[in-house]
Length: 273
Image (tube, rainbow, N blue to C red; front, side):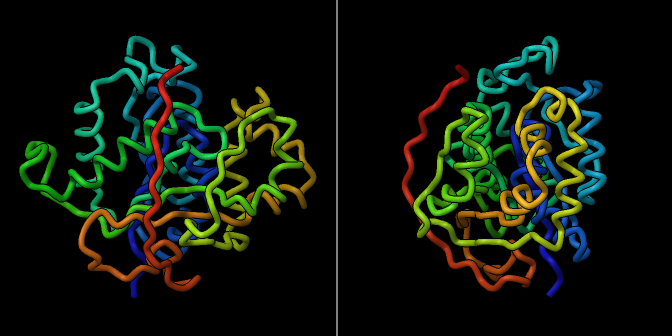
């Protein structure tokens, strides 16, 4: 079975490498089409250039930028609305157009908490992606955004409670939150060790974030063994956006067994801050 095509949707440049760099590299190495949509930062900025390099390393093509401003960095897209402030219908339509143009088998994005730190842009990206994946398959929604296409599965990048034992000691100095989910909600635990070199190179491509001591910079300051422990596993929650017409092993490209579907209720609570 050919490896399923994969579209990742993340809030900021570097999210794709930190959250799904291993799975992106795995799919690309298996010959699958892969791509990344990034909600914030505009073309022509340093971080957009760094994203281009990271995606080249991961084999994920050219950046697909929605071009909105980061909630906490207005200079990220001069003159553009903050991502969380933009009209929801406008943002969903843009993402629907990318989904219908790329026609992915699988979409991955942030979980409902927005990952470990719970950044408001991450949370909003989760909401927008959930809506867009559902809308993309409905021919009477956004008819000007391309022919309908329903991805087979949507996966949320997450961290289980059990990972805190590993993460806590290394990430506590960052002062960031630790938003994790119950282990039973995780439906795909992916060993990305074989692709860790490529994933780490993609993280380092985000030089601005390394230099300012954001998560890539914090990771760069850790011993190699600690980085391996933190980055060699990726966890996902599977969500079925439509009829289950495709195998459920698509996220791991047949390398790590089936991931059975699960549903877990979560209350969304974040704004642009």
